[in-house]
Length: 489
Image (cartoon, rainbow, N blue to C red):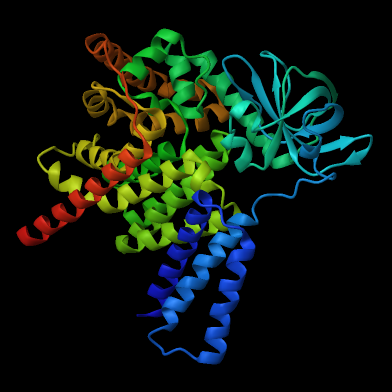
């Protein structure tokens, strides 16, 4: 076994150790004696050369489990979570872009001070709608703190970000503005400018759908239009998630190579610039950044002409991300969807290219390549979607086939619409009609299909064991189909 393969399996074992510790709690002091025993075996017993790889695998597996156990902070009198279930007056800073929900605004407060003493930890504050708070604002808040586990509800998103205190019905006083990181302030300010540009240029519902498609802002979509997307199983195109970015990275590359006829080696750099710009455009959320890193890894493997290396790049990226924050593996749906969608792109794209070989790649609309990439990513995340959301839309296959080919075109034109808009609003209007026509077609298709399948989606109970069984059959189908293809070739 060569060194590169040993390293690859060590990374897999590290991820496996994190996975085991995520679902089966074992105190770290249990792993420590096993770890020391293995080291003793290596130093004094001098195992044979054939045994060494398995020794490394065991060590990395244990290191993964230990890393997960050490990822949770110590809750003591220096951590703000120590004061949960008490009424507090504290000062802090808004350290993320306020998240506007349908009934509230959620803000993450860091750099918490009580009586001029700074505490560790962060607080999730639920402010009233239409509050004018921005990233970087320093605020004074009075409210009763609650724990993220209160009322039997586990807030996974908060735990991932090491937030263990929640504040409801706060009294907020704004103290200072623009106290945050300069780079992030510019990102969020730019996002707001783009939102204003879209609002000025497009009427409804095209404007709100375009804002959701390009910026991930769904709150302003009319309820009727949102129901159309829900009924047709196409809501995923309106949310900027790891799955969204993973698919987009592949589709942008297809568009640049197939439509603009740019060589793949050069196209990679243009695709990378556009993907990075898109991530910045949506506010650089962690899920989008992680998916972009994985997506760019796949594109880089294609650039150097070694697509088989894509899997190793993705495993390296996942291992580094989990080393930084091991809670992502079990608690972050976005990480799970982006990781599995990238694996789908790696393993299933050749298969779907064969299935869709009779579908043409038109000069300005590479339908076959877009469908192959989209279905490859979707097939491997399907069990997770069923498990987490428990919905099955009978209209989804038809709706996705009809609208997915136009999504990369809209995204591509949208990015240039924003770039032109930063120079001149008049210049951006050059792309208004193509984008408006594409959005109108998208909404019309979704509306018609939603009216036909008015009884969909079906709500079902889909337990974890069912998702694992479904993954077993998907992997079996992949292996069987690859054997058939190798025989035919």
